[in-house]
Length: 152
Image (tube, rainbow, N blue to C red; front, top):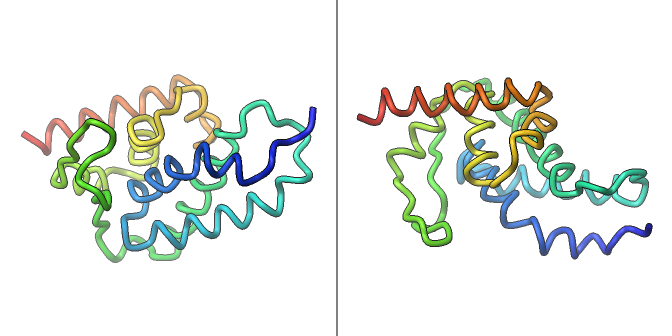
């Protein structure tokens, strides 16, 4: 089975990956991380052996680029996690809430953003953050529990 053109992959998943990165690294750095992720994906794309879940593959690359960015920043600067637009689909974004998402521990922040901004299944989240499916569920649960404590 031949790979679809790379542009088709971008058209289908590019906005979701960008939204995920805004949630992970903040609006100021998401564009740079997206470009790095897309360049890495473009280079690797022709050599892919398995292409049954390209969405998850693309999110994995974006997650790694985002984590690399966060490590470089060494968490000295607080994240401002606010999507560029006030609406995602039919939902209104609560800027205070997403600011608090930026304060979550790395794995919880990644799991929450992948689940709610990337709309990924727990099995895909597990593959991206390199943990079990149950650990992915637990990271989402723990992240939501932390948000509930802070958001009240």
